[in-house]
Image 1 (cartoon, rainbow, N blue to C red):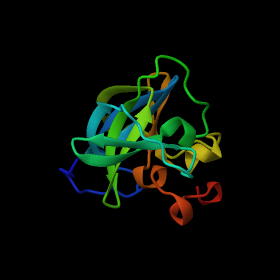
Image 2: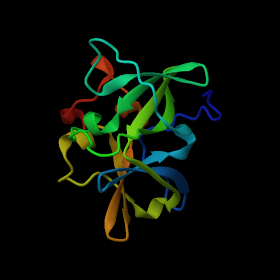
Image 3: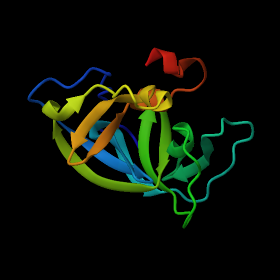
Image 4: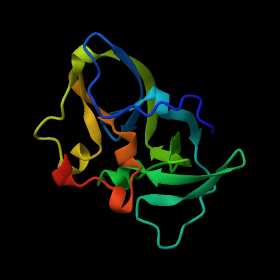
Length: 166
């Protein structure tokens, strides 16, 4: 999972007229987007090893092609209840601070190329936990695509954003 592109896009809104590619993921009925330049892999997370005393969103560690990857449950990170169902852990491989992460999601969707013209700041009614890890939204036909800030999602301890900072 070495970075093919080390671009660490900031939290600024895209410039008007530009397009950005996003890998979409689903948590229940909610649609989230990750900038494609931050995604390294999409895989099924198997054989998770528990990490004693880890934060609740850390589901464990796994071996992905010889590299230790931290499996982080996006549902728990966003304050959603654990998923019930088939137990198949879809993951999106990301890298942050030289460490490899597998972001556990319900389902991986399609890649969308979206114009900056549809990008908007976070709505005021968006849950504060979500605002702390979101860069903004794209309005699609009848639904929102919430764009996740990878650095904020993967921040822990003192680096973790607070709701008041959003």
